[in-house]
Amino acid sequence: MPNLPSCITPPNRILMGPGPSDIAPRVLSAMAAPTVGHLDPYFLQIMDETQQMLRQVFRTENKLTMSVSGTGSSGMEACVVNLVEPGDRVVVCVNGVFGGRMADVASRCGAEVTTIERPFGEVFTPDEIADVCKRVSPKLLGIVHAETSTGARQPLDGLADIVHDAGALLLVDCVTSLGGCPIEIDKWGIDAAYSGTQKCLSCPPGLAPVTFSDRAVDVIDKRTHKVASWYLDITMVRNYWSDKSRAYHHTAPINMNYGLHEALRIVLEEGLEARHARHHRNHLALRAGLEAMGVEFAVAEDHRLPMLNAVLIPEGVDDKAVRGQLLNQFGIEIGGGLGPLAGKTWRIGLMGEASTPRNVLVFLAALEACLKAQGHQSSPGAGVAAANEAYAHA
Ligand code: PLP
Image (tube, rainbow, N blue to C red; front, side, top):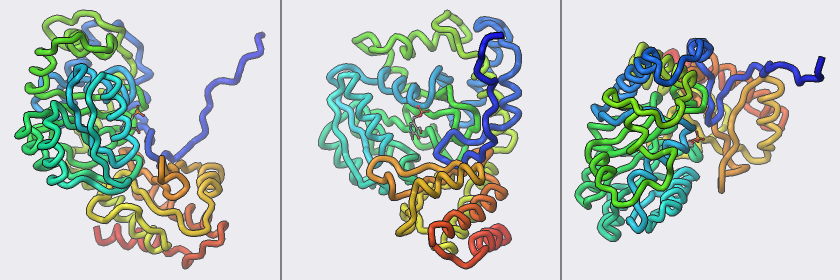
């Protein structure tokens, strides 16, 4: 008998960090179904249904809507590498880690990148977007809807008109927002968007839903250079997703696509409005509980994300000790701050399956114990009581 490592027995966690979130058991079951070939008629049907459901969740009629093989970052790269050619002018709005990444990806594609910046936790105004569009005349403007590194929600309504008037395309990162708060691809005039499976869709990490408007497809069709990435070249990958050709490009991650298919079914069964309302309700209850315990939010009220609650670590409290105790004693994962917010904020996720009253209440009780161990006193049970009160009035 060879000396093998033990089989996979992960600890039971409540995933309340910046993602991955808790996975719906139905999604895990779907992923355990037998693998079929990537050109099997059964899998082709799953692909077609996934595209239809993605259109509903993205709220779009875009024909070119599909999942890219890879995590959310592959969606980011797929959008940028296909829309940008060397020498193109690109504007990226940077108010957190993921905007910074988009700028990096665009510069690796040979774009002339201009960034506009806001402090972490703040959002951009339409005037700032108009100014930079006027100054730079870009081909593409990229912006993050839900900045997971800061907890800020960027208002998008009205931005497309500004960007289109300047002759540019609007690219939006909705990795964390899709399935948790409204995202209206067609109504808001967004030309390209990408997401990830592991946040509010509650599917394991591994696929990136993407969608491209006709205007974006036209830009791709008129490229003069080959797409710099072979794997993410939409001009080839789309032939596999097209019901006309089904040309082999790469072996699709079959079981990941089963998982996404089931995750989308769950989202649509619940209904987008009901799902968004659930995320909002749990966010408000968490907020009431945290405030009753003297824990403040890091983002102005108008721009808070319901699925990613960034809060300031109270004075004198040890960041790592609290996160360690939450994980080891209570099995709860939350995230620390990223970039300049490291050691200053906690990021408490209420994404998809994890956005429940049970998690809010258990977390508040656990946090109270952890804060008490750090000498931070609040009146016993105040957090849970305030959250319960918020639920009673929701
Ligand atoms: N964009 C945002 C807003 C994110 O939150 C993340 C991941 O947390 C990404 C992009 C990158 O996604 P992934 O880590 O799945 O590659």
